[in-house]
Image (cartoon, rainbow, N blue to C red; front, side, top):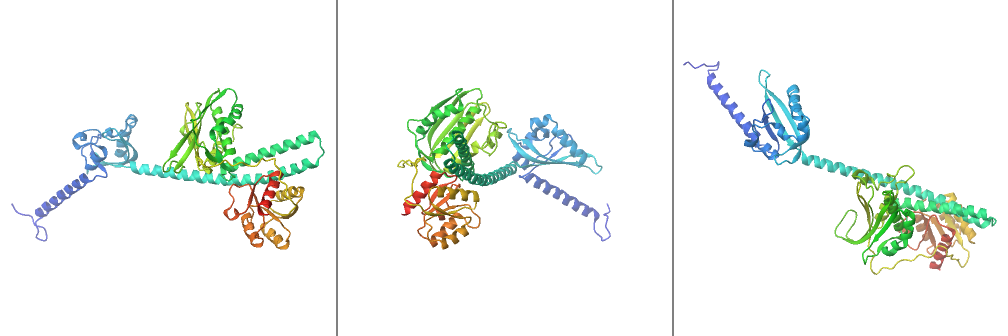
Length: 529
């Protein structure tokens, strides 16, 4: 047989054999490469969807050996619900019509577990365009999706935290302004009561107005509790004694259709908290429990000692008392429970709740170093747990002086009153003048310093904290450079006394009464006399 030579004298038959061998080697290398891939399931399907090849990645991801799966229909990898909806057939039809199908969804492993998969199916056709099968690539994206969900949860938590912080700042600012308005109302009514004729109807109207103003002051304290800006008078509290004292009040508040069961251990640690805020928290929780059982029922109040090791929720290591209010009412689903402590969120309907109760309890508990924990199931009731730090065993309960005790200064004083709110400034001055003092008014810290330089007879400085340009604490620091021994009263509605104003400063909470102001003046003068 003659050998065919090309133009260069080479043998065409030999070159064809060489190309064929190279192609065969390339195909072998590609097959080995595909077979060796373990991060992707790569396999072939015949035109009907039956598995015809299987690589190592497919075995690792799906769990089947080649012997177990080759010859089986690829719909075995789909969930039962997807098979019922015809998803496998739809995937092949899409690939047949458009050349490719891609999607993400749940797939099944051999052991019955599910995994999240990214799937691509490519149609394979011969030179004449006839469909000869499908190439299928599957990637396990379970971990990626889990990481994405965790990121979304973290983002949502950050968003909620920022939202709560913004609302807290707004609430604190509104409460501060309310305090100033209430200061003007309460002080004006107090002075008016002293000056009008002793007519019973007039006195009754003034007293009613004062009570309304005091209720408004209690509301601002609740708002500040939510914003965690109210002053907390932390003291040692015997929880069992507190609940015993409150039982009558709680029962009258919720009504006779609901029975209160109190379950305490024989010995229980005292807690360190603000007694008024704790009473308010318990009252709110009891009312919530009542509303969850409109037909009546039992409300349990329990308390136990708990030792926390490490970090649990918002708690650090230490000993705590967990005070619980438990009902067997309607309960909450997971979505409602997740939003329960959001400010202004309520399920009670229009006019039946402000949505601030749980958020204020949350703020109170957190400010005291504890937390509010909620557990609930629809139809099985709700358990609200207030965690508070246990008081040290050698602590003593602080006793505040009775509010109606009047302290009278030995001599009238020349007082410099400073406040940027003209209503508050005018009424503070009027209260002091009514007590016999001489008052000089300043509408800013800058003006107050000018007066201090001009007047040597000023014996006492009383100043607001939140003022523009120069805050109360900044004024106090500057004033003490001029008068090192100057008695100072810081009047503020916010809870924290600034560190730079804490030394040798008497704090006076807004809104204050004339008796509160008189006591603060007397105590400040006596301490520094």
